[in-house]
Every structure is written in C-alpha cells, then in structure tokens.
Length: 441
Ligand code: FES
Ligand SMILES: [Fe+2]
Image 1 (cartoon, rainbow, N blue to C red):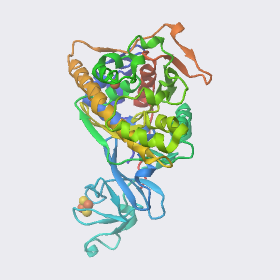
Image 2 (image 1 turned 30 degrees about the vertical axis):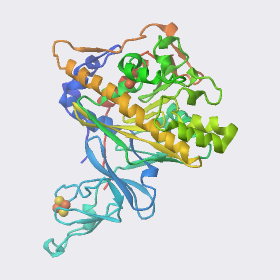
Image 3 (image 1 turned 135 degrees about the vertical axis):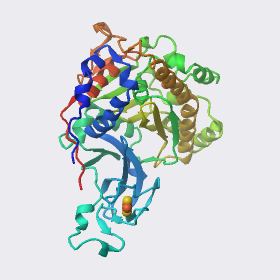
Image 4 (image 1 turned 90 degrees about the vertical axis):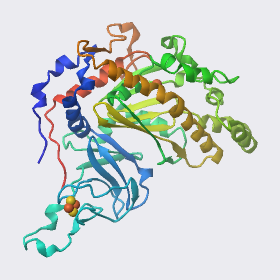
C-alpha cells in the first residue's frame, strides 16, 4: 500500500512552525514531526544510499536505512545496482543482518524463506504447507523503485514523481564534479572502515551546521589553537577574525543543497594548501618521501593530500567535507548517527593516501566532537516549552550582503544563515506536498 498524505499535514501548522526568519523548537523536538520526516523527507526526495566503490563487484552488498526503513544496497548477479527493503515478505523480519558482504541470495533467519539478490522469492521451506495457489512472485522483497547514481554516488527515492537525479542535484552536480576532478582521471574509493559517532540530538543540527561558518571560531577554538601551534600551520585561521571579511562564502543551491567555499581564502600558489595543514603525526616522514620521489611536483601532490576546502551538502543526508563523506542517519528525534568515510584516490603515490588518512583522523577526532556537544546542548535548550523559537535570521533584509553568482545562485558572507533558511523552505515543501510513496515488488 502506498503512503499518502498523513493526518500530520492537518495536525501541524507548517507555516507557523517554519517562518522565513525563525523555526519553531518543535521542528527539532517533536516525535510526530520526526516520524513524518522519516517518511516524507527520507522517502519523498532523493536520498544518498552508498558509494559504488563500497559495492564494487557483482553480489556485493551493504545494509543501511532509508529514514527508518532498513534496506540492502547491492549489485545483483548482472552488476545492476538495487536497493531492496530488508523486510521478509513472510512475517517481516529483516533478511540480512550483516553490515556488508557478498551474497547471491538472502535466507531469512526466522523461517528460512530465501530470496535472490534481485529480490525474487526463490523458495520456502516445506512448501507443501502452502496451497497450490501459492505464487512465489507475490512474495518478492520490496525494493526502492528509483535508484540512480551520479559519478559513483548512489541515491534512491520512493517518489516516482520526483525529478530525475541530475535535475535534483542541480547546481550541486557541478560542485560534485569539481570535488571529484581535483584528481584528473583518478578513481575515488570510499573506505568502509569508517568513523561512526552518535549524538543525543536531532539530525537537523548536523545539517544546519554543515553550512554554518559562524560557529567555527567559537566551537572549535581548541582545534584552531592546536593548528596555530605549528610554525607554518595556519589552518582555518581565516575563520577567527571576522570571517565576513574573508573571500570565502556560503550559497543556497536549491532543492535543499548548500555550499561553503573556503577555496578563495587560499592563494593559488602550489603548496599553499599544504602549508596551512594542521600538524599531523608522521607527516615529516611522508613529506620527505614525496619530495624525494617527485621533486618539483611534490607541492602538487602534497596539496592533494589536504582537504578540498569545500563543504558541499546534498539534502537531506550527505555532507561532502574536505576529503570526507559524512552521512547523517536519524535514529530517533533526539538521537543521530553520523558516519564519516575517508576516501582514497588511485594513481597517486601511496604517501599521499596515507596523509589523507591522517587528515581523516584529525577533524573527526578534534572538531566533530565540539559540534556534537553543541548539538546535544541545543536539543536540551529546546526542551524548554515556554521559549519557542530558533533564530535563523543572520543577514535577513541586508541586500548589500548578498548577490547572485553567475549562475543565479544566492551567495553571501560565510557567517550568513541564508543556506539554512533556504533548505527549510524545501523541508516545508516536502512536509506539505501531495506525495505518493511507493515500494516496488
Ligand atoms: S519472517 Fe522471514 S521467513 Fe518468516
Ligand atoms: Fe563545526
């Protein structure tokens, strides 16, 4: 059966809850709204599922969630990428309990029904117990009807009326291209041994924060102090002295996507990125090897080992930051898992990938916990019923702070809250749209 508009549409006054300059605390704390989000936001729009490099061969799979729906993302025997609902057609048990692997079929652990990895029911134990009219084809696994990928990034949606994936990505597509094409002809591999962190607060605090250039100097003060300790390390210092005067900027890209570009804060001189890198364990040894092997080209390779200086946020759950891919998984209204995947690239000296791993270690270890503490404390603060509003009005009505770039994208100084305001309009659209969500069987 399809999920149509639920009664929540009538229960909540969405225009009251999401206003142009402020958002009601219930948007972060109300269980009913959270349940609607899991259906509508994580069903009604394209949601990031996995990277193709995580399931490189036929029959590879990984398990994940679409909102709260357990799913299996896989390549079938023919190599076709599918997203099956991890839900037995017999009595509903999950048929796959492993995080990842390689299998041509899944046997439900409860009563042993077996499905091929195309989702078809292949057999049931002691089949004579069912009548002659038992049709296997009526009991296939459900699957996400629309699955598509762009340059390795796999997305899926239950909304057959959603625009195609490229239209949905829109301006974010060009930025994704820029992120990938930093490494000409290189293949990007997402490393599956990821950092996983859980914080006690709503998932949207993470999404807001991805386009928040306002908090850095305050939330990450200790990290910036560490970065400044090295003689030449000045990483992220441009966030500390009125970042609005820096050339970096924030953009609202449409369809809920957001972007912070720190690249203009660097000179284009080779080695500039590298010289601003925070101190890293073992850095000198790897740097020496690269310099010895590559001579004048060494600065180029060293720059590629540093983050991309791009924060590209694809609504609702994918954050591409530096060299990392972060995925937001809402667990409950006040509980969220963030998984941080490192990436490696082909065709570069091994030392470059080792340094990328060192970069992977430092922000998740020293930066993200700063943010998560603040998310948790925001959620605690928003428990006060008498104080209703969350302000997202920085920059509102100040047209001199904003401009449209050459593609007509709204752009402003990096501390502006324009991108958060923008994505909330998309959020509200999905929460109130006439969606018809479908599982394919
Ligand atoms: S619930 Fe899967 S076989 Fe019974
Ligand atoms: Fe942060």
